[in-house]
Image (tube, rainbow, N blue to C red; front, side, top):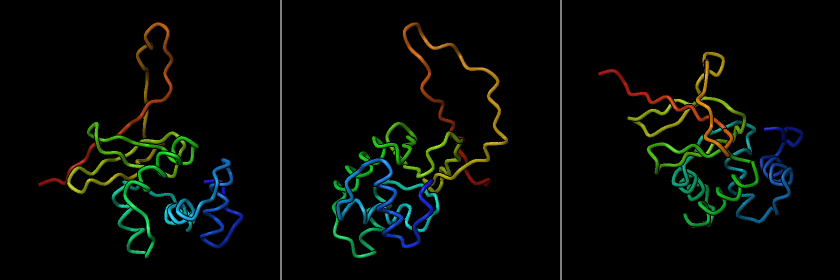
Length: 143
């Protein structure tokens, strides 16, 4: 996150949106404040962000949260990480880095990038190029 000059959560959120030219509507600012207002990176699902927004007294629908997260991804503010082909998590850290997925908790956390080594990737098919490589390491608690 490169918007660190502001000190108030709403100002940080507005600057974050402004950094990519997104119009700071009331709902976008409210959700951005929950995502980056404290200057920390986080992983959320649409449902967890919706619950947090409602707990904070924000009047937003789940559909608005989904649409806003999509807009933030399209603008490059969030990285979407899909787990199990259907469950999307959203990360405010958009730099390439690996993740741990805690199966028992349906939770995503950052994995130490310095420990990851990818020696070689397969060649992309003719007419295609590799856009990115997502690394999600699935974990479960030992029994």
